[in-house]
Image (cartoon, rainbow, N blue to C red; front, side):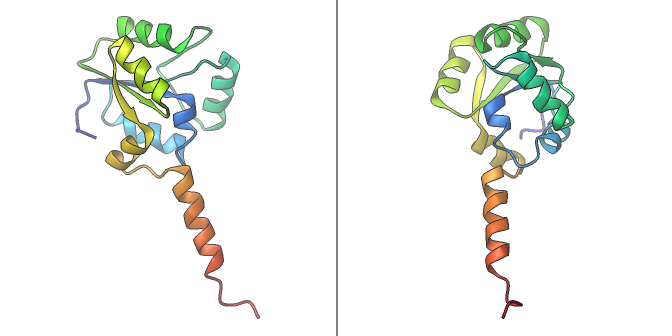
Length: 136
């Protein structure tokens, strides 16, 4: 992204599901963020199951609170120059504005950081399957 490391980065769970490799995204983002985590309106076990399945180690998560309360709590707990919220909807953008976080759509964040989105990976797989010339 900017190469800045004094940043707290929060992913909305649905936005994180849109990247092809959430584990790689977190590994990459750790190189230029101070703190990183996932927020969601879904129950804690849903976020925990997703992060465990994808081997994601997060510094914070929303827990039983809503996204707004979670983002406000993270901002109170982790002091950095920037707070960036990566989301996947207009509601996420409005929420970021309401709680004083910068907003980035997952597509824009992916482009800036060279992350592969799941839809792009699926398109590449479909293209690869259609190219087969070895079938009679």
